[in-house]
Image (cartoon, rainbow over all chains, first blue to last red; front, side, top):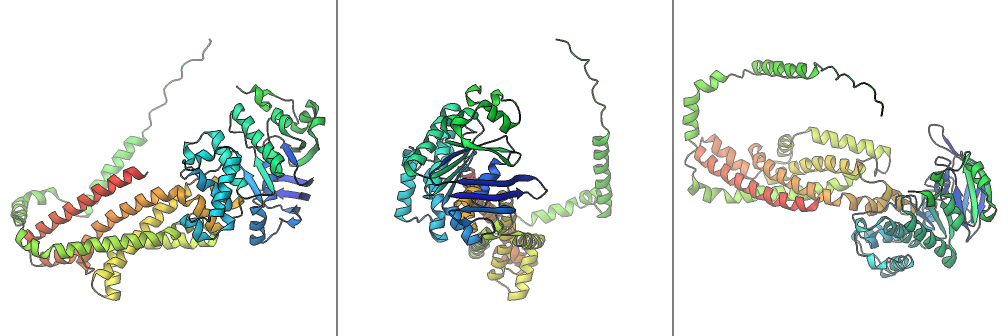
Length: 256
Length: 262
């Protein structure tokens, strides 16, 4: 369970990225977060694993306080929370398997990861993670030789290798074409259903939010302006969240 | 399609001309200051020709007996110094980059340390160690370790600065500790550069270690300095040719390997 209690983030320089957020996400939920760029979506996700510390209020993951947690506690919390990035953030010079094994770093001592002497159990978890996203045959291929969609699936496998309770995805399909976007979104949906991992996804495209979300949260200028079932969301709702009329840029099917 | 009028070409700037004039003026000024004189070179042409004549023919019979031992010592000094210097430089380079330093203080202290050791030239390091621990190859090794360390620290830390920070964020997000996250995400990015720099530094060490002997730090330089003192330029010629061939061969191999790396 993820709980935001009156949580705010003010960046150095005075930008208020999140303002007094109250939000509870229950185990196994699939939540889509929408909002304009700069509305605080990325900050909200990174506040969950403490990559961006909240400056006011509190954030709890399974009852553990993230705000002001010690380095050791923070690492413990992070090890249960997978993060998926818009730009994949793979080490492209090394193999797919090495990238996925990164998800096991917190479980092994430094000398093992440095020398590449991973325990068999961790290799097995990494391989199973690759199987779950359907690219295990690429395990020994250099990450740079993969297409964008394949690289994002490696990013998902890396997160899965953590055996996480929570999966956070920050605009996971924004760098992908429509066909690949649907494949990746279906992967995330399937993982949520099969493994029951709580999933929170930032999305820009409204049609993707409608197609895959169950619950939708809307952010505007750092404030939570909508929280409800995606089935109840109308175009007017989007217009209110975005604070402007919907344009073709907001709909993936209308991208050239 | 209606178009605006074509713009007039921008006025030519006088700055390039002034810059060239300034460079010429400064060169003339500097040449006068140091007493540079073409006439001196021309007038001493005969002396110079006699002097150069004393280098020939190279004394190979002597060289065969006396060069191989010290030359091998020179190469050994360079190998040991390059390996130790580049190994020690690895963590130091990571601390000297804002991306991977553990904290601000480590970064500033390390950066300052690298700047200081880089300011001191290799020959001066050799003089320091010869004075401190005595004549011999060990002083040369220590001098070149400092030399290798300073170059690798600078080159590698700047390569780390330009590494992709994304994978590091991803590694930290998995709950990895700082060192482990850096090792898994940044080290693989800079590894090919690191090996290429190490080979380049080995080349520099070979060249540097040939002259370190002049101040008493072992290797072929010691022999070179002794023969210069006896004005045996035919022997010096033989040594110089040997050094040239060995440096050339090592560079060729190093360039070949480096080209395949990056």
